Every structure is written in structure tokens, then in C-alpha cells.
Length: 333
Image 1 (cartoon, rainbow, N blue to C red):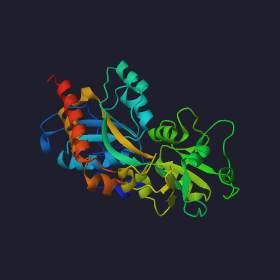
Image 2 (image 1 turned 135 degrees about the vertical axis):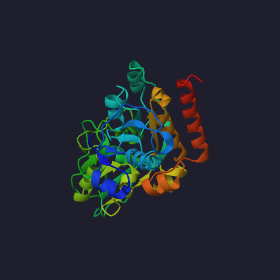
Image 3 (image 1 turned 135 degrees about the horizontal axis):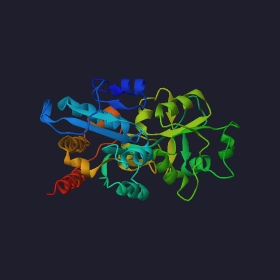
Image 4 (image 1 turned 30 degrees about the vertical axis):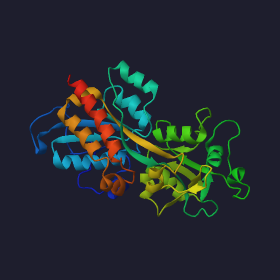
């Protein structure tokens, strides 16, 4: 298969070199049907395919690296397709065992999966602080209200085009917008939290499912603005500036602390992975899912390495109970 090995590569180097393309635990291999066996470290072997969110992608990659250190004969292929793109084109058609998502699965996606006898199991794996970014040389704004963001990103006939349209003290310059595609769960979440479900999210921005492209675009224009997951911002603090968000109680900057405390509203959000319940009958799939939840409380992996808020112990227990119930059900226990 094509794809780059993620084993032994630091997350910073990986993101810089690979962007959000698919990665494989073993390079140069031929993709095999999922199967269990007694080969290799830990007694597991087989293949796992993962699609979905670009936001969850670096976390999935970090968990993958740790897992294959113990189970070298399990091949894990991760592709960043966007949450919705993953559900529609990969997971619900039965092409992948997991789909990552930066927002909860939608009713219509559950129905699409059901048509193919696929039951998704919702597992929360972290919390993100969705981050609004501007150019480093932007010297006129450090914080925006939710209403100002709504003005900028709302579609319709009266779309904002210049910074001065939002605040007369801001420059009479065109706002250059960067953000995710319609397949992205990040766009879905931002749409609901900022623009509002009853309003249209404008789609005339420069859209990319590659978060590094959003960073690059904002970096190149003084009058640019964009949004993406906190993890990608943390890798690029020297290139762009994060704005604080005023939800009515003063300006709050995105951080692990403000996301965890709930102060960073309304842009702190849960992140998920969805294993296919039937695939949990395979030992290597079930063990990978368990490993992910066991390590979802890891400060080293989730916070320090990736840049998200880990689960607390009670959350981990709840997610593990959900997972174990699904495993028991598929195994007829």
C-alpha cells in the first residue's frame, strides 16, 4: 500500500512532513483482510482501517504509534477525510473499522450505516479547543465576540467583506477567509456553535481538509482569518496568532486549561472515535479500542504530545463501560 510509516517519527516532524495524508503502521505492506493470530509481540495480528476527522487524526496517530510498539504485526492505516467524509465514503459503506469525528455522529449518518448493517459505537477520546487564528502581524484585534464571528462567517445576501464592516475601528481591508471543507466536523461544530443551525455558514472561504493549508494561508496575509483544531495551532504558534473569544463574560484565550474548565465557550468540544461494533469481534480491533480508551487519560500522549485535554478517570470508566458492553454484545455474551 502507499503511505508513510509513522513509527519512530515525532509528532512535530510527522505533521510538518506529512500534513494530513494517510499513514500506515508498516510501510510497503500489502493490505490484508482483518484477521487475528498468534504472531508477533502481544499475540495479535491483522489490519485496521481508520477514516475521519483531521482534528482527531494526530491523536489517532499518536495512539497508533504506542500500540504498534507492543503489537508490531497489527497494521493500522489512518486517513484524514473529514468527519462527514469519513462516515459517508468510508465507514458507513463498510470500508473502515473506525471513523474519527470532531462532532457527534448525525442521525442521517446512523441511518446510512444501518442500511449496511453497521452499528457505530460512540467513544469520547478527548476535548479540543477549536481555535480562531489571524496573521502574526495583525495588530488590530486580539479578541472577538461570538457575534462578531457570526457576522463574518454567516452566509446569505449581506455577507461581511471587510474588517471595517464588523468594527469601524478596524482596517478598511478585505477579510481573507480560510477554513475547513463541508466534509469537516470542525465546520459542522463551528456552524452550530457560532453561526447557528438556523443560519447558513458561508462557503466562499478558501476551504481545505488539510489544516496545515489553513495555517499557511493565514500566515501569508495580514488580513486573513481562519479556524481549526487547537492541536494544529500549537504546532504553529510562531506562524499565526490565536484570538480570544468573548462569549459575554470577557475574553478567554484557547488553552488546555480553559477548555478543561469550560471557560472557553462555545468552542471547547468533545472529540470521538467510532468503532464498528461487528469489527469488535476481532481481537486486534477490540484490543486497539481498549488501548485507546485506556490511554485517553494520558497527559503525556493527549496533552503534551498532541495538544488536547485528556479524559478524567470517571470519563474513561464511562467510555470503557460503553466499549466493553459493545464487545460483549457482538460476542454474544
